[in-house]
Length: 191
Image (cartoon, rainbow, N blue to C red; front, top):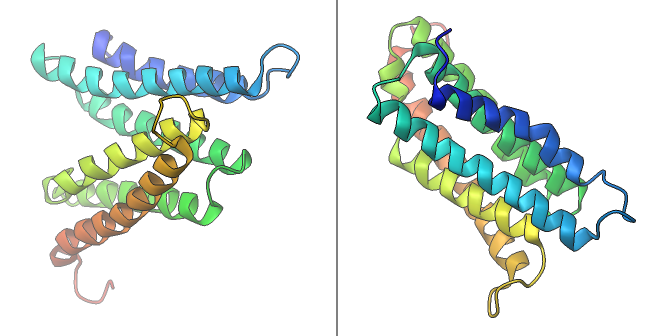
């Protein structure tokens, strides 16, 4: 494995997961819930920034690799899944919305793996709808981690809940989009 800055940023995102989760296990005598919320949100936002930065730098510097292409979406999914589980645990997100989003991530990852084995991975490449869904997810997680009025006139609970609903709807929409793209490649009798 060739080590470079984009790969290091992807690994950083994975390393940040237990740190992010651990914030909420810090004793209340050490940090208030508001402080935990800010710290967790900051860690998640840093992870989101590294998600953008690693891809940008890899393309810009010509440091793309098969391993990086594999590891990047794994890191993305792990941090989002961890955040959704924490939000459900904190009572800030409905479990069924989290299950829809997590289930889709698993299903589409499996679909992409299968299509790659068929040599048709470009058939299910990331679409614009997936990028919009990711934006809604990041907005939802950041707002629901803050979970308090921090910017005058912005209700983070409403914003986060609305963005999570939008993310869940776009999650289903994008899943059907990818399944539709893959359908012509499913051999007759395998459905």
